[in-house]
Image (tube, rainbow, N blue to C red):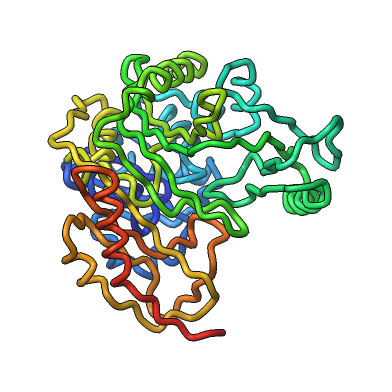
Length: 401
């Protein structure tokens, strides 16, 4: 039986849509997970044919489970992950058990923000940065504001803004306490609009799948609360982005793969915030479907399986995705307005994440975004207006705690 093994998945978003796509393509789907709750909610994962509880930080344990699957006759076609921090782990397992069209070395480098910064430090798009060794203080003059972060950070966790030396020392001490054996990175604060770029690589050539401008809400963390996805990439952005993406493909030596970039467009051109060796999570797959009419994770699976993948747009819509957050802590009693929001003009999808009884808090990471609305339009402004209008319908009813 043709089988795809997934290492980890979220309950919703791109990683879950990948397991559904694999089932749709006719594959037997296996999930290796260390999430006990997924076993408790097993009936909600009908697209996953076999779920195996295993320590996903233990390579030997996972290899043993995969060998058991082979012993019962499953024909493993690929092993893959769409979630941090398992993309490299899945690729290494794929190297062992099946044909791997991607580069485990490139994925490993991309997952390590320190290694990525050092590899790209001589490029025009690399910001100024300093690596601070464990227990050390930075040498040299600091220019404020400045960003300080852990190389292991994901989803805006452990990415902090310091406006002066007092805040810098406070953040540095907190991160060094949390990660005593890890280096910490300080980077110049980049002024300019922030963009996310989704990229697929075929035969060493990067294909820019989508470009979107991000809306950032600044609280205790930098949280992305809006994505403006262009139906057509603005001509003033295309050349620079194509050159930058080709440079990354060449430096990392990627023949086949997927990655996304977070960039700032500054007065000195594009500057790279970070690279992730996978498709963006959350609503990204649905956003691209709304904009261009195809399922990105489904086509990416085909690419990794060595099948013919088709990234040709079926249509072109401007899309705006608005994420909803809360501004005070409370226990969720109910959510109202979802159906009214869905019936609003131009709305492609509405998703509400938390269930009754969940404690909601102001965002400290991307995981604290509690709903999204995807709107289509003939322009960005129309899509934004439609999403905002629908968002007014949704109310989180909470009890203060």
